Length: 296
Image (cartoon, rainbow, N blue to C red):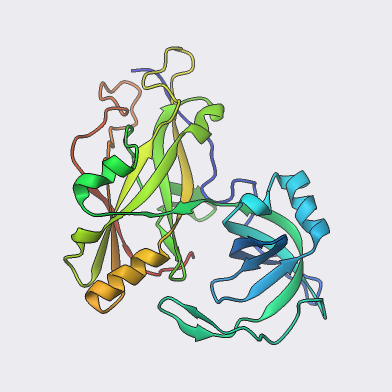
């Protein structure tokens, strides 16, 4: 078997950002949050999980694009660092009442901010199909997934990662897979999360299906020197409409979310003859997560 390498791709912090805030004692400190980027008729803002709106200055939005390659108009879930602007144009106590799934009615506050750093999390809307047989008809599924609880290492040691939830709107899944050892091929690999309407059999557990499309990445690397690599990255999926449908069918929101996938967890051993690219025929449980657990 060709030599295996680990393609160094950060899970969430793709731009090299740190989750640690640079807090200060005055009002000029930098805050950090995950928020959804919104654009409407030329107006741009970030919406937090509590519904509050954060309006960035045009200059700081432009700076994020030039410094980090972050395009707010094309992003959805984002990790943003920002400074609050006191008494800004949009600052208010809130005057628009909104209703969010599972959270009731809220009156969001509005803030003006200056962005200091930003990174987008790969995001898309989860799909809905009538039956399990339709999952791979609506989504391309031509490559296996190694893990959706990959190991991560930091100063505290090595531990198993987990999916996390952005309110009742998005589910973020850490995905690890095998691919050609070529960073330019990374964007070829895409993932879909699918909800089966006829699959609601449990009033506590929501079952979803994760599929992997390798795109233009070759099935077998032709260059012996290139070989294979392991990649890992966070993938975010909008599941708000799915949770609403589940609630309608069962009368409550799920306590557990179970993710099914075509898993190939061949040992990461260069001398092992198992093929990590071989596509399994059947679905298996990739992981079960507690619903609405936010990132730690």
